[in-house]
Image (cartoon, rainbow, N blue to C red):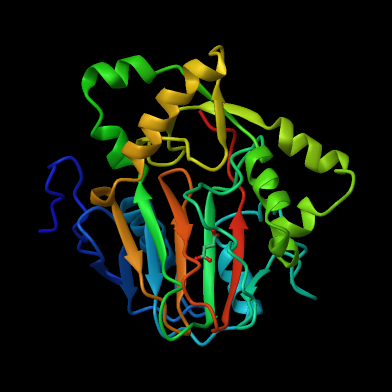
Length: 304
Ligand code: SIN
């Protein structure tokens, strides 16, 4: 039994009939075995979806698939989400390349800094799917933190205090940081930041959106903290100086090591996570080596 030491979350595998699941850490994450992406049955798919909601992040190993299979598997989860940053691959507009070349010495990498994907949108993506093609010999891991466990670990009084609060999410600070770091120009965020005048679609993302700080999962009904240190810039009705310490406390709480899992990538992996139930971050620790990944995002609902 993989019971989280706090007793507030159980990451043990269910006894599925059509897939096998192996938990990755006590706090969250699991490997799914016995599935060939592209040939999965409906019964397997139903269990994969259940495992995703339970473990928040799941991954498959040894999947020799291309954009077509990645695209088709993503579509099984719903419509594609709007991607805030890139234009996609030729023939597969919704498959976004995340490639860092060996000679790219930027201080930043796409996805570094804890975040949930595009929460500044009115309907942020529910699920993200990341496929590995080339992995550096060391580094380049991804980490996730369990936002449902973080919510469960707040005191009853803190849960009462934060119920009903709304977070202001904006792309503002991420763009500003990319504008400072000129070497980021050749990255999805850097290309946006380099524009002399921001187009209306980007200005809309700077204005951003307010979403509930305590989010109820549309499918499972599970409650989770919905914020991150990258895009949450304020709280509705609060002055900035009032919101900042509360956001800092909640972000520190949310991203503490006890709530996380970490994936050491191999070539041919596919990882899926539920942005409503976890935050994630990439690492820029493989200078001199190439990393080639492809990403899709699945549409979500207005957070409630
Ligand atoms: C992301 O934030 O979607 C990218 C994660 C990664 O490249 O590890």
